[in-house]
Amino acid sequence: MSRIELDPDREERIDMEIVVDAYTPEEQAMGWYYYLADKINFPFQAKYSSRSGEVVEVIDMAEEEECETDMFVQIRYRELDTTDVFTVPLTNLDPLEADAPTLEAIADWHYWLERGYQLEGDDNYEEG
Image (cartoon, rainbow, N blue to C red; front, top):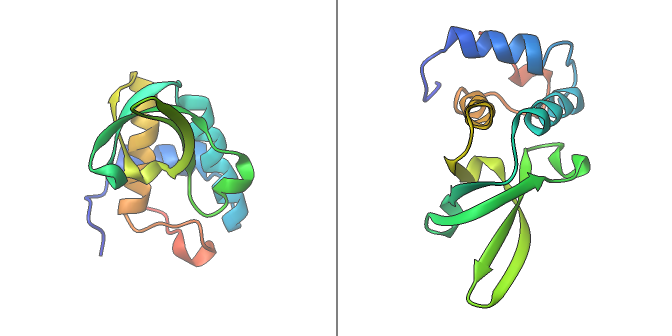
C-alpha cells in the first residue's frame, strides 16, 4: 500500500511528460533522468538525510549510466579544510534553497517512489 495519497495532477504530469512511451525500465529511467536534468537548476542547497541532515550543495546530475535503477546527483561536501564530490541518491536529499521548477521536479521523483513505483520493470509501473 502506498504511503502517500494519490495526486491526480502529479500523476498526469508523470504519465504525460516523464514516462510517456516508456515500456522498459531503461526507458523509464531515461525519461526520469532527462526530466530531472532539464527541470533542476543547479546548484542548490539540500539536507542530506544519510549524513544526519547535514546541509550540502547539490551541483549536478550523476552520469546517465549511474541512473539506470535510481536517480543520483552529485553533491559537494565540505568538512573542515576538505572539499569532495560524491554521488548520492536524490531520494536522500531534501532541497532547502531551490527555485520552483527544482522543487517540483524533486517532489515528483519523491512522490513516484513513495507511491511504490520503481525503475525495475514494466510490472511495477501502474497508471494512477
